[in-house]
Amino acid sequence: MVKEDPLAFRFDCGAIWLNLLATQGRTFGAHPVERLATPGRLAEWLERCELTPARPPDDDDLRLARALRETLRPLALATVDHLPPPASAVAELAAFLAGHDDPIRLSADGRLRREPPRSTADALARIARQAVDQMTGADRFALRSCPEQDCRGVFVDPPGRRRWCPSPACASRGRVRALRARRTAAAAGTDAAAPDAQNSPAPDA
Image 1 (cartoon, helix red, strand yellow):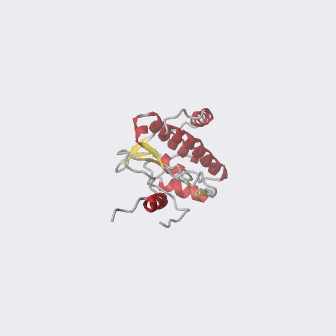
Image 2: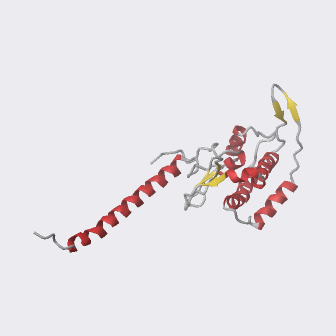
Image 3: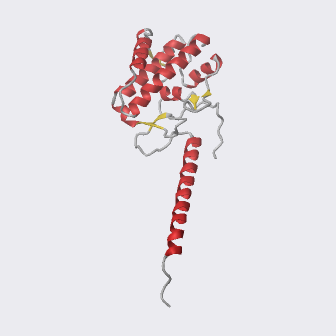
């Protein structure tokens, strides 16, 4: 079984907003793993996403980030599963975006840059708009979800060939479970064949 640091941030889901969803691990399991445990951890995550706000995150910002994450999660899963999105999540996301206007101001300092977000809320609004663009455009067809029932992590997979999310642990658990199922099925088939062999008539001498 692959060993991972359960508190390590994931940046391999294919988009920043999907990486935000991954800041909680094993979401649908008995013991979810919270990777945004403190304002400092949120600040670290935003920095690694190149979205450091002018004002450091505080406790209210941490609650806002977690709330946005859990608003986006059911919308993402509904998009992957081609189901109607939960009306409450749609309303929450629309209200959040309506209350956070973040004008685009560009500069060219060696490369094209956008002015840093003024606040954590502005940074989160940028992430939310990225999510909306991906879930409502043609890019939504590249979204997949992990089949591990305690994970259900959403990620980008344009070729449609990946079975599990990028977490090696999910793939490892899935393969081990599949192997055990095959062995059990094979053993059951062998046991079922044994009585038939015993009851078959003996060949003529």
